Image 1: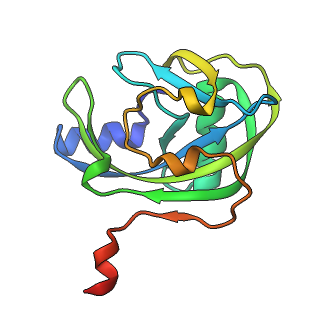
Image 2 (image 1 turned 120 degrees about the horizontal axis):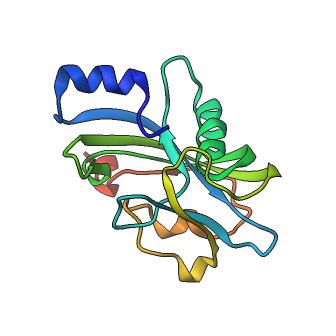
Length: 164
């Protein structure tokens, strides 16, 4: 579903003005350790399977729903790998709607399904090797794409904040 009733109603009140949008994104690997990327229709850049958290949903519920809608895959989020937001995560859609995403990025495993878009948002879905990652719409740090067994979560901040 391209835009939910909740966000349509909100947009009806604020127009194209900047809004905060709590969101989720998934890093999903196949058996060859390639990462799933989505090329949305009417976009200039690739993205991770992602979407907005709806009222009443937990981030994990939103992730499972969004991934299924965009890819046809049922996934299980097993690790939170990053939290992102701020000016770097502002985005303007072709019709002019402005958002500032606050994104929970989860690493996921595939439970079942076939790679096929359900909601019509994806022009292309492709597993791509880490080192060949395409240019993305949002500036996620390279470290979240590295396959590792690290258990720490990437928190986005400026180093000098700790010294202030």
